[in-house]
Image 1 (tube, rainbow, N blue to C red):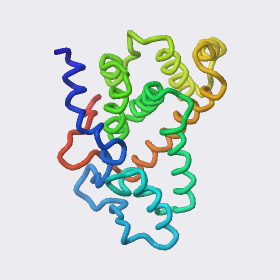
Image 2 (cartoon, rainbow, N blue to C red; image 1 turned 90 degrees about the horizontal axis):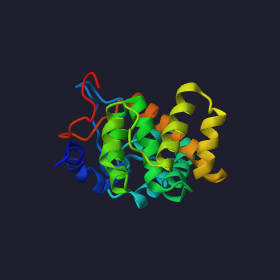
Image 3 (cartoon, rainbow, N blue to C red; image 1 turned 90 degrees about the vertical axis):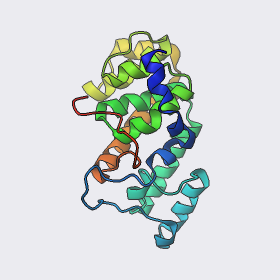
Image 4 (cartoon, rainbow, N blue to C red; image 1 turned 135 degrees about the horizontal axis):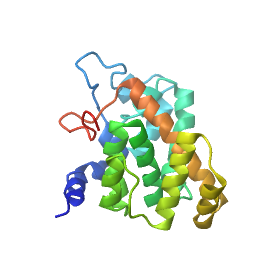
Length: 217
């Protein structure tokens, strides 16, 4: 079996619970006290509870992952929840390409939680194991379809050079309409923010699970 397929099969269980299952009750990487101890619904105050109830409607495992720190700021948390909901379930960008964009950001940030949660989701949506493996190795994937290459080049150029060249924009425009380009930009920026939130809160993968990125990767 191809090494990429073996690697992907090891992540199958993470896909079953999606983002929330992959991040719930994540502990800090060190033995020190967590910066944001995991909240439960019983601990939420009157300002936090309405948001917690909305989260629980789409999560079978509770208010883990980025929601754990975000709910400390319930007004911001509500705005972000609404944004997350659109960018995950209502976006105009096809799921496979949306997840690819998230992985590109996760790799740039070396975000253990983002990669752990979204690599299996990308594979489930149809992104090839070779593309995922090469991206994880910090390489430009060598065999991408036109729309996949457009996502990689657009997101990478925008986030690393802080602009999009006319050539890259023209290639992106061949495969995406205006709404999709706007949504693609938003999902990339959103997951930079998520990566920042997770890094600040020192969230990592669930207990007993291996971090995707080893030292030096």
